Length: 340
Image (tube, rainbow, N blue to C red):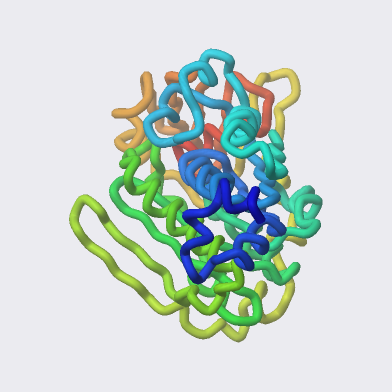
């Protein structure tokens, strides 16, 4: 008790947590998928709060543009080209050496996500694409574990908590989600927006782990901090035909997430086939201000990235990421500039 009090006294003085709640936190296990802007803020809060077991996965590396909002990283991480999961684990161990911290450099897919579910009490969204969010939603409802969703882009943010057996799920709220090209790398993002969303995610996690689930509001909270807008919407009833929370089919788990990603042998290229066709004129306009160069023909759009790789987009929805055979790197660039 004395050791707990020395580190967590200010948190334990907050009556809804107290000694009992703090002990629940220390026994809790959280899976964070994505250690970018949202994930780093969430992990920072949870490590300092004394959540006893933090596991996180990320497929990407630290870049200079990350430092504006990804609060666990610094210029040394960029210079060493560290994977985000490695850099985050190193930083978090310095913040709290008394808890268990596991960082995994991997791309979460239907093939491996269940490997990380042993003993998990809460799943937190730190991703930037709905393909992975649907996957996390499915595994959460299969294992009956709360899923905390968050998103941030431009000056806008949103957050919601989905609890199996108590609320509808993410797929009920967003039955489909088409890519709009609005990502942090195409229209930007303000760091305070990220902090707000991630803090709401961390707060919801603390409520769940400390035995205060009843304090969770069953609604989607959205806001625009620049334009001073805030709106909350009740999650509503589950759809009777929802394949996740009602029919228990879990489509993102039963369908391979690798089917539409192919490494082209000997070409230093990865092909990604998306669900939507591309209007090349529209995409030229979107990407031209933020990349090194764009060249359009009647048949394709070639995009030259500052990172060194090239993206080739075809009207039928195919994309080639040229300059790498690393599937995780290709998917990161695709998500960054096009959105998965």
